[in-house]
Length: 134
Image (cartoon, rainbow, N blue to C red):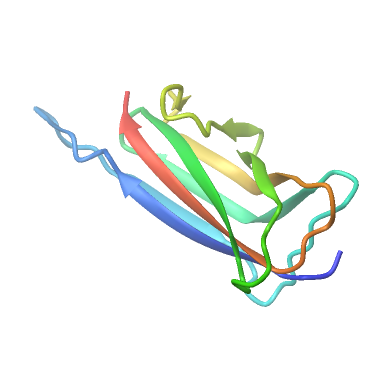
């Protein structure tokens, strides 16, 4: 499949929780090759993009809001993000049922699954991660 996939990450903290022990924090590291062409495999309709580490000093919940945007405003994008995974953990896209992370960390390959009928051209994906205390 030709085309480029642009990934933009937005992180929102709902974690400025102060208790008697102090504030909870989240540390995020994402390692990937910025020069690598990212191609979606047509058989699995998925792509892996580097390695992501997310850890905290306390347990947390997280969900992600994926949004697909066209690179060219004249071309409509008919593709949706169906899954977001970090390692073997699928991150919820439902704010009412966020993914619980009792181990205080998530680690692994960042994988995105897509739904489409025809292979898309260039498009951008914005992933907004929202973190909450448990």
